Length: 335
Ligand SMILES: Nc1ncnc2c1ncn2[C@@H]1O[C@H](COP(=O)(O)OP(=O)(O)O)[C@@H](O)[C@H]1O
Ligand SMILES: [Mg+2]
Image (cartoon, rainbow, N blue to C red; front, side, top):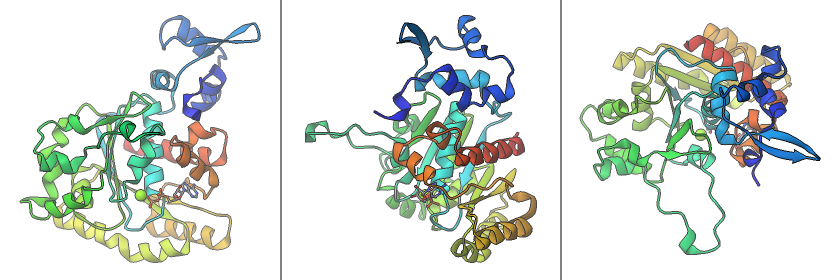
């Protein structure tokens, strides 16, 4: 059984949303349930005492009231992009999306990586024992264009959270990149062809591959915020000194007016070199850097295997603390 399928008690939910830190009364959830302000929990007998348990799907309605992130003041379209692989782009995109959704914020992930990382991360597949039970073919953005569908919602899939949907990558996305190169206004195809149909989402998050392509250009053009994770390790440091230029040259050429360009230090270690690189990032990029780095930790890999966010995995882990701090900081900047 997956962790996300377990029932969530008042204590679990208190830890997930850090309720005791922010709200005094111990009985808040119970009172809210009795007043009909949050969904009704089922009762599980522990010995002779009935204990309240909520399902994962009920959490966003609770998070909307008791979470730590308020609703955004306008639609946020966030492009996650760093011209470097392995710096936690996909991990950060997924954790951000899931944490927003847990707080009751209606969120859509759009996967744009040829490796289909965030799609594999987001969607759980039941194990199958016969070919008849294999999942039907998944449709993605490529099919939206090649089959000339006119409703983008036809290819959007649901996740275990009612507030989180995904527009999945399919391997054919590679061909879409090629196709877009031949289109007129090729950097504006997303805006021209489907972004307007997604107004019901409060937040849209694009997860990109590290290599520069038409999908990266389209997502940068369609977004009002760019989030760029940077690894605190020598390989990333070396690459990023020059690689960031490509983003700013593109921004200049297209006169893009992002509200925010935010850089997030990731993979921080206790070693001297890692700490020095973090300090160098702060020095080079100043206020654009989130002063709450995401540490290198196996909890990140574990959460990924189980397909939930780090804060669901273990809300009291140091890595969960990093995500709480970084995401709260980013959210304050955006709102
Ligand atoms: N906090 C962490 N520390 C170390 N490794 C992590 C952490 N979080 C995730 N990982 C692992 O790091 C690898 C690269 O992360 P990923 O998000 O795919 O990077 P990118 O999308 O930038 O290529 C993945 O295998 C992932 O499971
Ligand atoms: Mg990735």
